[in-house]
Image 1: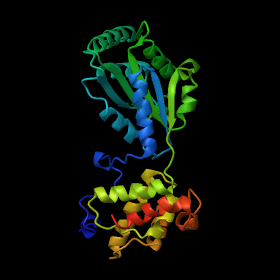
Image 2: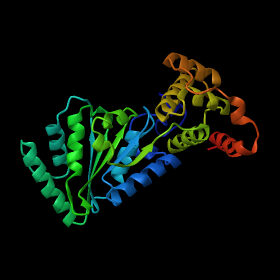
Image 3: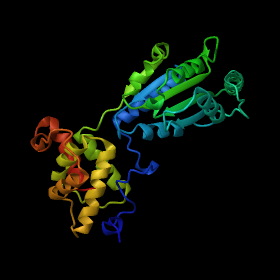
Image 4: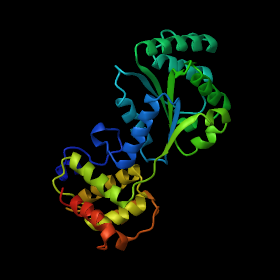
Length: 300
């Protein structure tokens, strides 16, 4: 028996594995998607979304892709897994993902093939969109120049290709490798970690999706989770997952402050934000909503 059965969950609530069921539609993610979608629908050309490690960039990239129906968009998602790639490889992958049959070996011919394909997509009344995840790995000027060239594939008063970069804050420096490309960014959005209210709501949401009848987390554990995770979703998941497993090993019924402290020590985590318990739980008008969320976490 694992902790999933022990706590009568239907599935692990805090796994970091991608799962659409656990997509948390928070306000900043909604704002980001709305702006990215607007950028595409109005043919802005180039948009950028940046955020720290574990803040949900890849989740949003996949969500964005899912929100581009095939009848209106020819879209693709390309994940850059290392920096040792060439402009020719990049162009060939984009050609393939946008439906170019048998891309040629030379860049000039490939660009002609891609232009012809983009014209066909335009004639079908659809928009071509390329999402690039981990874009901070594009660490050469030649790669940045390649994207600038792709953005030049256009008709009079009409761009044929929209590109969205998703990456770490280091992407800002990478973009400066080609200043003309950096100047073409029509829209940029920066993801930030959750505040305490968002962290509580995020935990409550994932527990609810997992089939949890009553949260095993005592309310006083929440400031610790916020402090050691810094509000970063990936770290929230890691801490909570380990805490549930530790509680199961100890045959406990609830996750206590002591268990959270033990878990973060084992994980080697340090406080990322100050621990301010009184600010989270004092009864003040500005904290009323926060207390309701915290209390609701224990009564899902």
